[in-house]
Length: 327
Length: 239
Image (cartoon, rainbow over all chains, first blue to last red; front, side, top):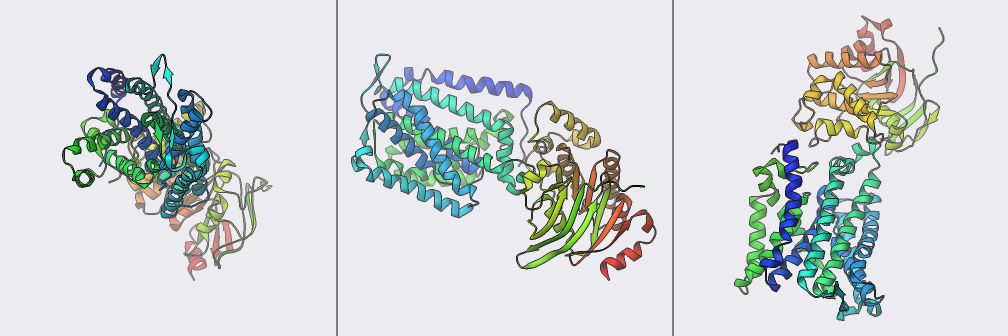
């Protein structure tokens, strides 16, 4: 399947559309109740988690599953810095991102040693499980199985347990990180990321430092997901080790695939749809998991390139630079 | 007339895959500005020789001296940085990137205004690529893909261009076009080391040749001196 690249007019339109969406979203608290707002806040977190994941497995083409480890690192970093060191939660977001980036650096070390494919998958899965073990067995720091609650806090005189305030903060962080990732992928660096995925040896032979490209992508992925972890910690108010296990990883993976592997737009769509879906399925008690699985399978069979491919067919403004359609 | 100092000196080069030796003490020079072609039967070590020069395989022993710098054993990206670019037999293009993106990847390490100027020069050399600059390379014909591969190598402004079977899989008509491309590259002073099975192209485009057999240099000379006596070369290679 081939896609038409957007014209310069369409690219301008895309820029307007990119900024119009968050501006319109600013109005959502006016039209939602507390429950819906909570779900929308969860969507924003899922967007960042899926974005970080798709960068590594979709754009860079490395079968690495350390995403949930980055997420847990970010969430625990934020909770520990808030609860143990008394840092304002808002300040813990970039710090959680930095620690997530450190997790990305550690995860990339396996890829940089030439470990690929299923072997990389197993090693990074083990990294995630190791982190979960660490949360469980460092009780003085993490609270062990009891988890770690975040202290009550106010910002601008409003409690941070207020979902509307959280929404505006989450939205700002999400827009900044999505835009930064888009810019990164549209740059020369994005071209190098795609080249590494297509043919690593040929890329290296063009004097492109493939190791640095791999390392930077993992670090940026870790940063984005680490920041998402900090948002999650405040979103739920109490972090538990169980939140960062295989179930979360599988759900994130499903979001990546349903949205469209390696697509930023796909990450957003996959996260939004699969965060909302379980809420609709609550109408079918006892059958939620079955329906959820069937719907995900049906989407993947009908649209192997994910939901983003639908929009790309509608208009070239949804075509992402250096995005590769696999057919 | 004095012979100029060689740009590339290969000395007693040994390369093998596992325990199987492919090159067994090959020794030859490439002079600045010339096109040297490596001839030989399949398995004689021609492509391995190019791969050793550009770092895709590491020599077990011997020396690859490029403009006085020892490059044997360096990684491909370091060798590329010294000014050696290869157009491999498989072309190694990025099929879903556009022609222009493929070309720009060849100059990734440079940057600045200079890239646009070099890109313009490549488009002047290959006007067909300029017409197809926004097309994914997978949609191009074999000949056009070969132009992209050569153009991408030229984007790095190489001092030595390695061409591994540039006529591979191309029509006889396009082989003539390849020969013309090599002529213009020579006019521009690009030094080339080429592997070519098509003897007509090899003798049409090269200045000198050497014959490899079982990983050793067994013959060589000036192409003009061999004009009209291709049969002797064929006997040397295959019999």
